Image 1 (cartoon, rainbow, N blue to C red):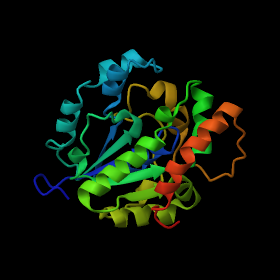
Image 2: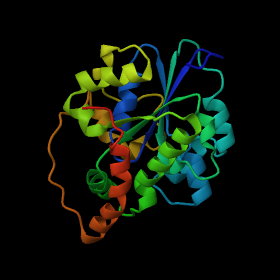
Image 3: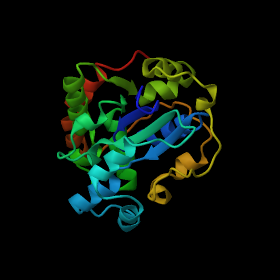
Image 4: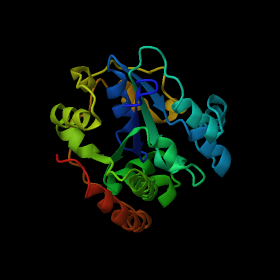
Length: 247
């Protein structure tokens, strides 16, 4: 808890093509929570020059100064928001951003098997690298926060949530030291005010959803290039997975 303003800030660190937006919907459906969607995206695109879908719209929708973004995240909250839920993409956190800026947050890492991430990403965007997948950077942020705080951050696996949200989400709330609210299990379909400018390209499925999709075992085939990319990701994923909360 941040005693200065009595707001609990939850930084959820994820890679792309996870259930990160569904988790933002889940927390955003609480009575006490406000969501923030990928606040460092415009900064990331400006600094890297990458040509992502809807690049111009993203850059004009957010501050491209990471210092200003940090100041806003750690600044005074909106009235009535006991929780601030921040959905991060780990690859947006470039080296100049000091992890110490997040020490007052409840830091949680949302992981997903990289085979599933790569397959899902490839269906939307044909340019995929280790940096895009974000699992390596996820581990770097995890280890950086662990070193600074002396505590092991929370790790939760997407598949565990999908298999049993009614059990895993209350357990997660306990670890975050926040009260469980059953309305986290379902939400109204449609767009949210906190959704990023990129939602039109990426959020069609979650816009149609009213809860977590039932878990389905997926048989995923990857190209030879993507299999090689997968092999690079697996050691990072396994290190994070070793710390995940029990399913």
